[in-house]
Structures are given as C-alpha cells and as structure tokens.
Amino acid sequence: MKRMLHIIASPREDESRTLQVSDVFLENFKKKHLDWAIDELNLFKESIPSLSQKSVSGKYVLLGGKDLYGSLKDTWAEILQHIDRFKTADFFLISTPMWNFSIPYPLKHYIDVIVQPKYLFRYKENGEVEGLVKDKKMVVIISRGGQYDNNPKINFQDPYLRAIFNFVGIQDIEFIIAEPMDMNPELKQQRLEEAKKRCQEMSL
Ligand SMILES: Cc1cc2nc3c(=O)[nH]c(=O)nc-3n(C[C@H](O)[C@H](O)[C@H](O)COP(=O)(O)O)c2cc1C
Image 1: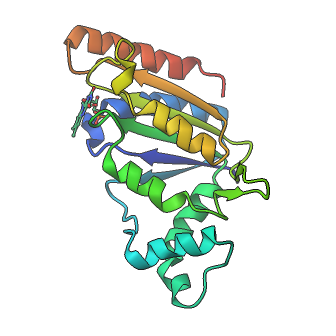
Image 2 (image 1 turned 90 degrees about the vertical axis):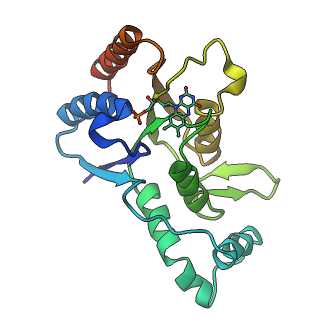
Image 3 (image 1 turned 120 degrees about the horizontal axis):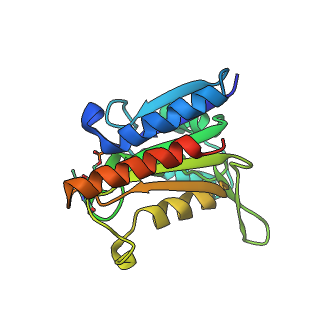
C-alpha cells in the first residue's frame, strides 16, 4: 500500500490556518488516491530523538564511510526508525507556519535527525552529493503572518525547505503559501480561500 507522510509543524490544531489549507489538500488527495495510507507525523506531539554528543558522533562515523558499530547502533535506533519512516514514504506533505522568518524548531529538529549520510545523501567519488530520496513528490503548505514577496531577503523558510529537500534528492516540490494572515482579516480570508482553491484544483 502506498503511503503519504504528512509532517505537521504547527501546534495550533483546530486553530491552525496552515492545517485548514492542508485539510482541503488532503480531501482532494484522498479522493484521487483511495487506497493510500495517510501517515500523520505531528512534530509537536511525537517525540523526536535529541541529538546528543554520542548520537552526533554517529553522523561523523557515517561521514567517514564506516557503518555504525557497537552501542552507537542502540543510540541510533530511534533515529533510524525516523529515517525509515521518511524514506519509505511515497509522497510528502509538510504543513508549516513561518516562525521568526523560518520554520518552527521541531521541524528543524526533525530535519537534523533524518538528513544523514548513507541514508538520505551520499558523497560520490568525485565529491558531488547524491540525494538518495529519488523520484518522489513533496507539497509544502505554509501560512505566514506577514507578506514576503516584497521582502524576500528575510524569508528563510521556503528557500531553506527547497534547498534541504533538493539536497536529499526531492526535486519535485510545490509550495502553497497563504499570506499575509495577521495583517488584515479580509485579506487573510481571501488568501486562505485562494490557497484552498489551489489545493482543490491541483492535479495529483
Ligand atoms: C513563535 C511565532 C513566530 C512567528 N514568526 C513569524 C514571522 O517571522 N513572520 C511572519 O510572517 N509570521 C510569523 N508568525 C505568525 C504565523 O506565521 C502566522 O500566524 C501563521 O498563520 C500561523 O500558522 P498556524 O495558524 O498554522 O499555526 C509567528 C508566529 C509564532 C507563534
């Protein structure tokens, strides 16, 4: 059975504007993919392993071209579970607000946990990077309090997400951005409706 991994990075549950838009996306997606499983990973509810001195040392073992050994394997058990859950998904949906010009900290934490050499990327003999998550599509639904098309220099959100997920091999990434959400209630409503319409009209 194919599986979509829905990564949620807003803690606001029913109040979340981002999730309002994602709900419409999911409705459309489910209609077109009746037999897919939707695997919801709520980063504010599930525990993501912290990166200690020992677990980070595993990254350097892998960067050195070696496999994890001894007690490092136990330290990495949870990290490897998250990597596997990510890597075996067939489609990715990320629902995230902007926080302080970037992404909320649990999403950055999750990225730091899963983006590991040997598993999500590798260095080829010529020194080039090869992303190991191939031929998969990602949709990122974002809502933001302000508007950034006139001030791209302080937007470290979608450019960062595109860069990091391109790095691991996901080239097909589509962004749906609802902004501005916190400036004018009418404009907010209009932009939310526009984002939802885009979700309804997406050919998936
Ligand atoms: C901690 C925090 C930081 C925020 N930082 C920004 C920001 O830098 N720029 C911005 O436009 N909005 C910012 N916002 C506003 C949210 O992006 C906006 O309200 C968004 O629609 C919230 O999404 P949600 O309802 O899905 O949680 C911030 C909100 C919070 C709670």
